[in-house]
Image (cartoon, rainbow, N blue to C red; front, side, top):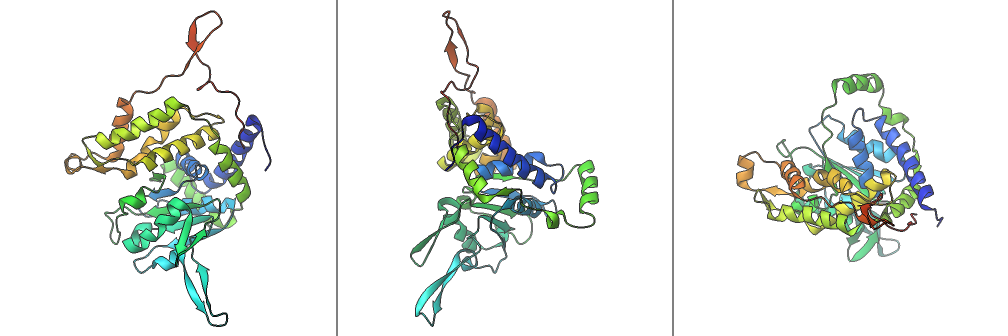
Length: 346
């Protein structure tokens, strides 16, 4: 594998991601923060859950991200009659060879678009659990590895809408982040009429990055340094959700791991080879809120998990930048967070 020094590797990362970002933003008008979070989840080896009302561009965002990268893409339309084997695949008896032949399902793609995931039955939803966490599928006692990179971009409608099944806690916990697209601003909606009024912009989209480039970028993100104080900060935030009086279910240790990985990706996208507490703070709501269950009293008081996470962020002490000793015996704040020898990314 080609080895880059720190600066060259970060430059390569930011230039590639900038191409993908520009391509996706050409389709999704006025939502730069949503696009950035999607790219963060991709580089952090996570999966993205897009939740909102119909018609705001959930599927469009998933398709735009998939088409911007030259890799295999499959779309699964979740319906009440969808079977688990439609997702994972099935073994079929071959009469000529007198043996079973495995026919891969739609999950065997590098980017999988799960449209309206909460319209399928809980049994079908559970077929995704192994692939989301372990990046493999086990059929009839045989385990099949999934390709790399691998990312599931799932969309779901609010549970109050007709014909939906709420995602079980175990499945929500496997999605790194949840994002709501939201309604566009009047200016963005007016621009959307000009761009989308005649033909869908997805038809003209061309890949701007290759799958092997994304794999190298993921490897570079893994090397981003996270100081012990920043790791402790992430643990304190997640731990606070487990003791908060308004929550009957806090975030899992998997949430802490996802928060750390996403912080690395955010730092790399910002051109840094180390993570800051600011990276943790900017991601906390998107990564933690969908895993939390409020108490009945909190629901009566209309307290949302997002509000609880914001409150925890305000109450949890933020680690200070490390102190460095000057040559004259005085103590001053270190210019970098943290002080570490040069690291090699890539």
